[in-house]
Length: 342
Image (tube, rainbow, N blue to C red):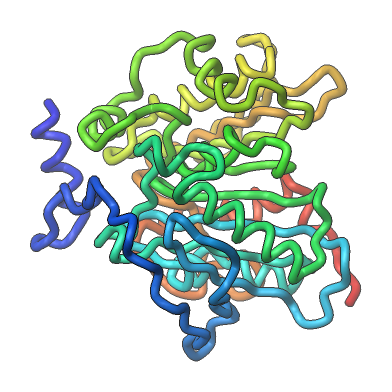
């Protein structure tokens, strides 16, 4: 079964790529220092690389966009790309920076380095990288803090989203730092604690581990025993995803629904063309867990080609045209699409 799964994933990547490269290396040198960051955005990209944002134990890169004239107290969105992507390619198709220009918020990307992983995957399965204040999670935390300071962002309106390995890392950030985020959108990702090494990561991608809702939520409780502020969790997954099985989206629902003590059957269901949405609200009617199942969609982020904020300016790997822009839909959930006056 696992061999068939690996072969199916290998068809998604270049022939010369070994599937194991998605998770290489298992050991990171503690003596290697991150090279100096380059501040040279490519032609047409609004993202600017920030060289010095902290101790950066995970050796990640940071790319920031603050619209000109952005006033203090505006929101901040953190984006984590998927494997075989980088900040600029993801932004071209997802359109977060263009939406930020139109609606008035800052956007920051954390980017993996080839020295850490040749396929640019975040190391979502390795405990040392997803433990609070260590490894890649600490680097991402520092990126958020630096971006929020530069943009003078509203600390109550910081959001996070990510695809695939970036989606799994989004889940890890929400689990470790729930008080930091007002909301998080996990696209084709995996629940926090789904794997602790590369072998179990492959198994989890094929099918989420069998755990009770309480067992899933306890993984978050272990790292965040007290959650005074509950970030709204939005989960997006294609029903035909052959890389990260739909069962992982379902496990994410159970992890956060049980953590927030929301009854399993107490959801509101909506049906749009090609999409089923279930919403678990709190006692005041505020959506706390939302699950979007996209009919027939494979592995990737739903995008919509077009001009303007939140639309895909170019075709990029694992950015899928399915008739709507998840960027715009997520921004609506977070209240970021209201008109902004410069």
